[in-house]
Amino acid sequence: MVAEVAPVYGFTGGRAVSFAAALVALAGAVLGGLALFRFVRRRAVIALAAGAVGVVGGGWVVAVAEGGPGSGSGIVGGLVALVFGLVALALGGMALKRS
Picture (tube, rainbow, N blue to C red):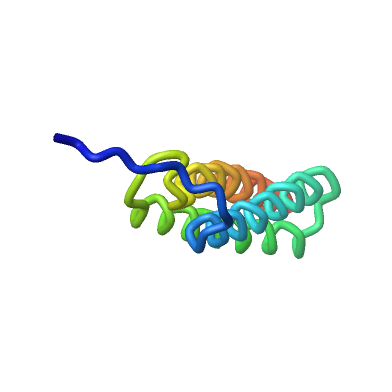
């Protein structure tokens, strides 16, 4: 028999880590886009670093998550952080290549 887990509505540790990683990755994606249009090398490097932090943080949350969406483990935020992190890495890399 499979036990069902009740949904968690609070702000748990997994959700906090995934939220922080997604926020950093989103900032990296924005800076990567700005660097791509304005050719600023410093923004491109910051976008790469923020994207790496987002990918590592999101990947860690997804790897250690013990439940699915609604379980309080932060898996949805971890996946969002992975996507934003990859976008930030791509934009930062393209901007760095152009500058």
